[in-house]
Image (cartoon, rainbow, N blue to C red; front, side, top):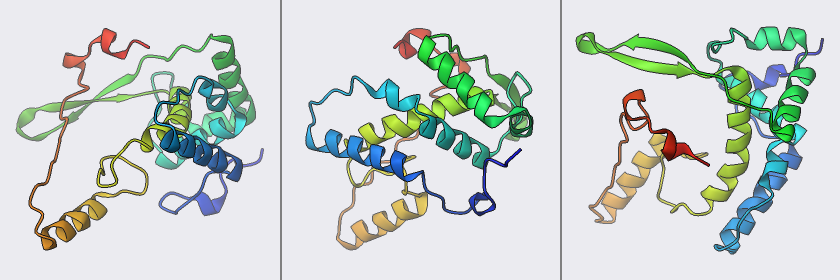
Amino acid sequence: MRNSVCPSEARGEMTKAPIALQELRRRIYRKAKSEKAHRFWGIFVHVTRKETLEEAYRIAKRNGGAAGIDGQTFATIETAGLECFLADIKDDLETGRYKPRPNRRVDIPKEQGKFRTLQIPCIRDRVVQGALKLILEAIFEADFCPNSYGFRPKRSPHRALAEVRRSLMRRMTTVIDVDLAKYLDLDSYCPRAYAV
């Protein structure tokens, strides 16, 4: 079986999405930027594209991580056949049979005897989430201010600090920092908030 990720795509190296997916995301971004009132009704087709699912899998694998509740690892997926795995996801999405599986809960110890609950999704769900992110990110990125930094592509905390320094040199003194700690914890989970 052929390895689905080439050695040059090892963790920590800069990689790019396949050119067709890059161009699709660029077109979606341009449309969202130029027509603020435009509604993207047909994006599900792009989420289920083979290229999008392959890229989402590659990103999930690059990020690593433990197996979800089903115990399936990247190695077991590739041994059984990556093409078949992605084809099954695509088919489940297109036929409406896809249902996310429960996350595996792991308690990570913190200081003072406290624990932080980490929820680990199955790789299958990570691929679907990643595919959605690849398409939706292009739409929502168009609405962000240029000086907004949190969890955005090509915007690290180091770049945010450099921007704060530049602003201070220009005698600008207001910095807004929002930390949504515990925003998505289990205790505050409300199913209605996530209804689609």
